[in-house]
Image (cartoon, rainbow, N blue to C red; front, top):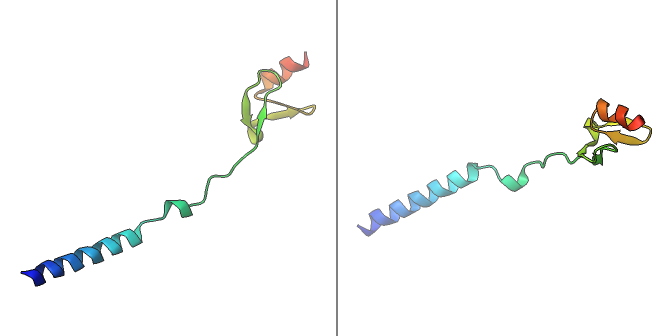
Length: 71
């Protein structure tokens, strides 16, 4: 009986090791790209720099705010 329990324990340990080895480590995944945020000169909304419209050294969240700021 003790041999059967020992074989079961070894089998469970091997299964657990193989299963944990196959999982991806979350800490090793690439982190998402970090992008600078800019503030709309008209309304103050913070948006990613790539999505903002630049005009005269200022950034805007849309063409409407750019045009309203000019007036």
